[in-house]
Length: 249
Image (cartoon, rainbow, N blue to C red):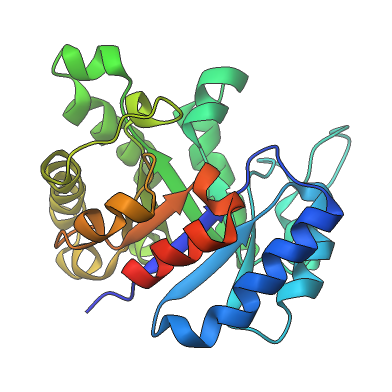
């Protein structure tokens, strides 16, 4: 049985007071959530604040991105080693907003994944198709290509150390949500792709749904056999909403 995991991606949101209130509420409820993993991924500026607020709880810390290089002359960037030094356990890589708005490519995603693993961070690799790609029937080939790039870089043997988040890009920030049947179909496809390379890895790798999951639909989505958790965006900024999703897991 794969352990469920709920990850809060705050995106470019948050200030210290807000972070303190949100994290305190979540940390205080961790024992009541049962046997699931929970991680919070605030902006870089709030990593230390959140680390302090969740210290001593079962909640862990993650970041929203990292650079593909080691420390060096890369002004404005943050390295894997810096994240590890800040107390991060997790890092989101290749989020659809990074791909669409900042030119993230499968090449950079694969290089960042390698950096994360070499620095003992747990990468959450985001894959998913746009509305136009789905309408054209290209969703399977798009996701397969995104996965293959990462596997080629890190090797099949390291896939057991990553978590995959499926993001139907057309369902992020639009109010739309893939039906449980649509989400399960893609999660099953991803698992099949992993299984074609390494059967045991496919059985243990956790695959998350990252398309506008909220308390009202979490139960149906998380009840699907191949959906192992959620990468939560705006709903992670509301303690009760986020905790409701966690309880659904």
